[in-house]
Image (tube, rainbow, N blue to C red; front, side):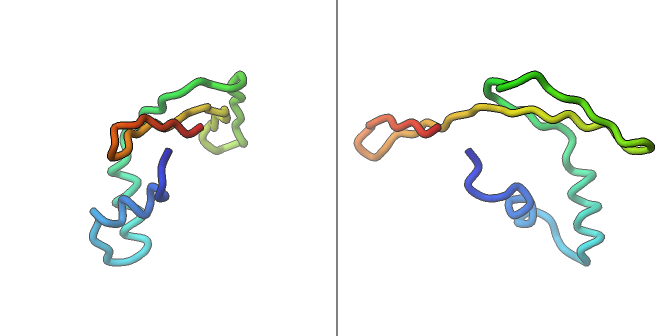
Length: 76
């Protein structure tokens, strides 16, 4: 679905003063993510003592586009 890593896309919009400063700016700018697809298996929630909980799940997606001659293609 995504052709470039998210960090590469965000680096186009963030000014860099240092690696630490840029990572802090990115962390504050990511507030919400919307995932569209079908969950493959039941989500598994894990938590390491003293750390934030993490949920692991698989997500099936596909990508559709039209070519110049209006033909519809699907990948995934």
